[in-house]
Image (cartoon, rainbow, N blue to C red; front, side):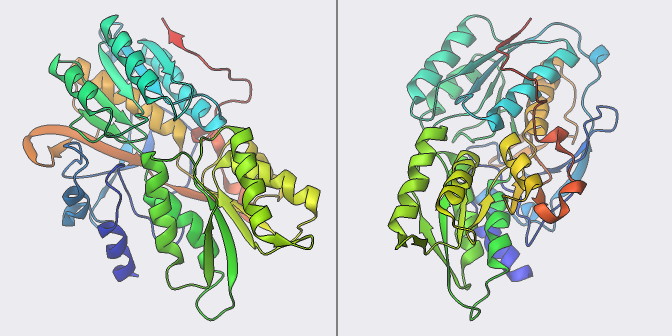
Length: 397
C-alpha cells in the first residue's frame, strides 16, 4: 500500500492541487455549519508558486504527512467593509458548476460581501474568460477568484492582476503561476478512487473486462489529473480502458461521445463494454442508452456527483461516484479572499509558498468521500449539491 501511495504522489499532475486517497474514501461529506466548519487537507509548502512538480513530491506533502484541519470560516462581524469579489468560471452548463455558484454566492451573502460572477460559456472560450476577468478587474474588483479554462494561457493576466496588488485565488482548475491562495479539489485522487472502485473487482488473472472512459473537456487541469489517477488505478489489473474522447461537458456533446464509444464496442445488439466511467453528463446520457438498448449488465460509474447522479445512485442506476464537495471548495475560496483583504490569518495559519519561502499563502482542498448505491443513506449532499430550487446568481450586492 505504501509503495502505491508514494507512486501516486510522484505522478501527480501539476495543474491541480492533489491529495492522494488510496483505495476508498477519506472522510464523510457532512452538513454545512459555519460554527463547526468542515475538514480540509493542507499542503506545506503551499504549491502556489507555479504548480511546480517538485512541490507535490516534497516529503511534507505526501499523504502521510499532510495535515487535516477543521476549516471554520469567518464570522460576518469580522468583515469590516463590503469588499467586491470578481468570480470567473468556465461555464454554468451543468449542476456541478451550479453547486460551485451556490457556494460562492451563499458564502458571500453570509459574510456581507459583493460578488460579480462571470461564466465564459464553455471550455472552448478561454479568450472570452480572460476578457471577462480583465473587464471585471477594471470595474473595481478587490480580489479575483478564478477557475481558469487554460492554466498556461491565464498566466499573463493573473500576473498583471497581482502586480496591481489585487489578490488572486486559484479555484478548482489550477493556473501555472503564482497565486495568493488555492482552493482546489484532489482530482488525481478523484480519478484514482473512481477507477479503483472498478479495479478492485478485477485484479490480474480474474478475467478481462472493458471499461470506457469519458473524462471531460480537453486540456482542463482537473480532467488531466483525473485521467492520470484513473490510469494508475488500472495498472496491473484485468481492466482494459477504452478512451471515449475529450469534449465539453454539455449534455448533447457528451451523449454523442457515449453513442460513439458504445457503437465502436458493440456488435449484434450486444456491447463488449462492461463499464462506462465518466463525467456526470456522460453517465446521465449512458443511463438512457443502456435502458434503450437493453444492456442490463453494463455498469455505470461517475467520477463526480451532480443532482442527476445523486438521484441515479439512489435509484440504483449508477454504481458509485466520489464527492469532491464543490460547495465547500467555493465557500473556502470566498473565505480565503476575504481573509486576505481583511489581513486576517488563514485558517491553517498558511504555509511558505514553494520556491518563495518568504511568501505565506494557503493551499487546501476538501476531504473526499465515495458514495455507493448500497450505502447511499450515509451520504449528506449539502456540501456537494446546490439546493433543488437554486437558480444561477451572477451578482451579490
